[in-house]
Every structure is written in structure tokens, then in C-alpha cells.
Amino acid sequence: MRDSILHALLRALDLLPWTRRRKPGRHSAAHLDHDPVHPVPDEVPCSAWAKPWPGISSHQARAVFLADAELDLTPDQRERRWAAAFAELGVDYPYAYPGDHFSAVG
Image 1 (tube, rainbow, N blue to C red):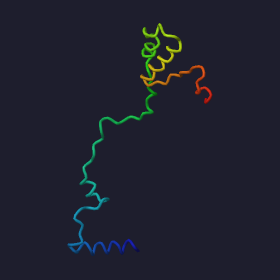
Image 2: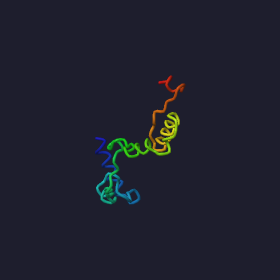
Image 3: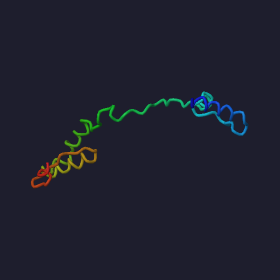
Image 4: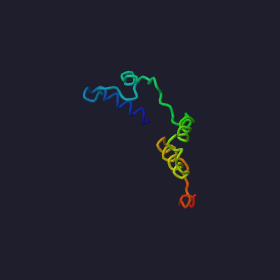
């Protein structure tokens, strides 16, 4: 009943020139035809989880361990140098030393 009353009221208002819509409604076919269709982009961004987590290559790791400047260092200095070199590459190197407070935590 409400729908028929509303339709009758809208038809009566459409007869009055100052109550007509200047643009088609958002859900009308004329409005949907009027809006431009947005093209689908050629490159669809892929998810970060679609690829495995990137890490350093074996060549990069080998270069860190076989650096010539580290041959004359003590083992503690060499391990610190390795930790710093891996930190530059963005890899956490498990660096531990006697008396560190990290081993007590985990």
C-alpha cells in the first residue's frame, strides 16, 4: 500500500516542473550508463604473502663469512663483525657472548 501511495505522489510531483530531478537517480539505468567505466589496471598488485619471505642469497652469506679482513681477528671480534655485516643486509645474526643478558631472557 505504501509503495503505491509513494509512486502516485512521485508521479504527481513529476508533473510540476520545479520538482523534477535534473540528474538521474544513483540506481537508475540512465545514471549507470552516464558514469564512465573505470578500466581494469594492467598490473594487479600481488599480495606480499604470495611470494616466500625474501632473504639473503648463499653468495651474500658466503661473502660475509669469507671476508679477507676478518682472517686476523679473534673469534669474538669475528663474530661481532659477522653480526654487523648481517645487520647491514637486514638479517638477524644470533650473536651471543659470555655474560650476555639475552640468554637469561629466552
